[in-house]
Image (cartoon, rainbow, N blue to C red; front, side):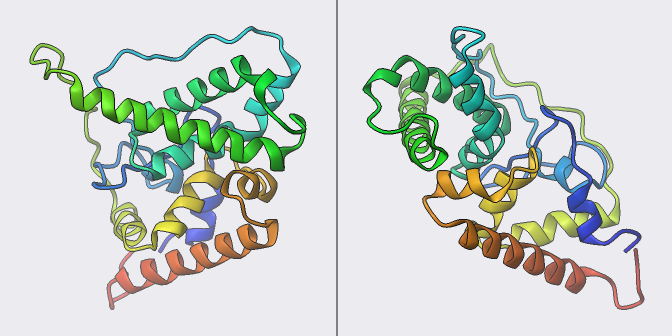
Length: 223
């Protein structure tokens, strides 16, 4: 391979260029062989955004978003939401948390307290979103517009196939970490595990991905 998987993992996009995968079916990659470009869904949900607009210039809200946005989007995507919908639901989660902040019992400045709270809100919002989708009548006049597929390279295809073979928890931790290169602390808070466990899971996920990519390299040393 021209570049190792480790190099691909370090080539991260800016905020908003993000990552995410549907839990059931991998979409066609949208652009380059960059690992995080590959992880991105980028598919249209066919729905109007429902993102609330919390009060601007709120330091507490700003801190939550800065700390948890990337891994929260990745977590929601790992539950089966499209990338676009995961972004919307993450912002809805912050809005709901901010509006209900006075009911929160605990230290709102402590990530280990806020993380599980945000995860619970996100889970219930996703469940409500799915119920609404099941009840909504099919709309024949508003079909999502699929992005124009790009021609992937061999390395990109190997990475795509290798990622699909990873265990669910390994896919989850990679999605959560690589959107904004989030450190272990917020990941641990959202998942309800220790930082050491997060670091171990990330390490195992990288190793597993490298091994699976290596197995897919042609015997003749193809790129």
